[in-house]
Image (cartoon, rainbow, N blue to C red; front, side, top):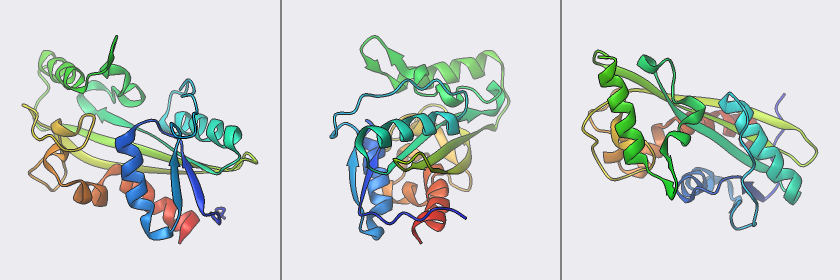
Length: 203
């Protein structure tokens, strides 16, 4: 039996402004005030897990303990079949530079690796998301989500964030980077995990 969320304020344990907006959009029907980790002055904990669930747990529990608020965290990334599931939990790390994250560089790296392996088309991949809702007493609920698709090159579109311009979701002929954010939010890996969260803790 999953624990119900019965508060009116939820901390979203992310410093990513795009992700915060996406989660706030998804939570809008439930009359829950959403606050981000940056607004609370929280540091980003070290993500030492080797799975999306482990990393999401680290972030959610750190935020809940620091603030006394229930905290929702997600860990998400792209897993590419021909690269044995990489970059996976290291999705953001592949974009790190000395002066912030460069996702064009990261997408180019993915493309170059696939070219070097002569990976055949379609180059299948999936965006994965695990949501963890943690309470200050240490309880948590875990909800995984997936969006299957394939990689395209060159990159297309300037919507979304991260690897969106090279990911074409299954059943569509446009990339996440070309898709209206409301449409993306309806079908994404995060939406899949979120529907399970809503069913388990909010509905």
